View 1 (cartoon, rainbow, N blue to C red):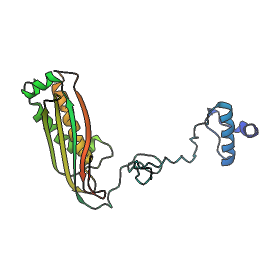
View 2: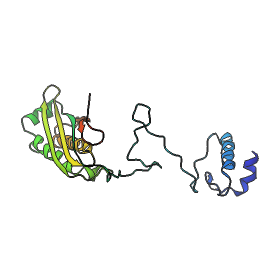
View 3: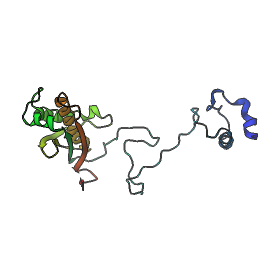
View 4: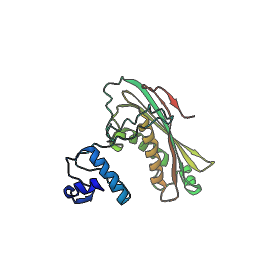
Length: 224
């Protein structure tokens, strides 16, 4: 307890043990933290008075090699919008899918076009296209892209009383359109729910995922 006793008079008490006066050598602070941990059972929170933040763990690509970084996180762990100005323009395409489980009653109403709000599949198709074009307004760190094409298809599946939704987005630019494709199917799925919710509250939107992308430095990728 020698270090703790020697500097106790100068400890700032406005935040308990969590805020210390500046000016002590780093090794002294480290020793003090160890003593406090032995007394209180845990290390104090980092001081807000200019201490160097701990660097975030280096994310990996799932293989453990540490080569694939999270591009929307800077070196201090803060969110950022990726600077794509140095990238080359290329044709980029992405395809995403989603499934809406309607249940038999709602499915029959959609199939016979008897939903009170109108033509579910047509309205959802338009909503999905509109959603793709609004992706940068919905997802904070997405770039505002000039989309060259958006396709949204909805198909009724009698086997499980569902609506299968496929969305495709394409552009010629510096960044990909994966988020635009996934936003398209997500918004289309939400629109199906909104159109059918009076018939059933048990509708489930599921399996939103990317199926294929092409273009850019990483090239083509398809779901196995």
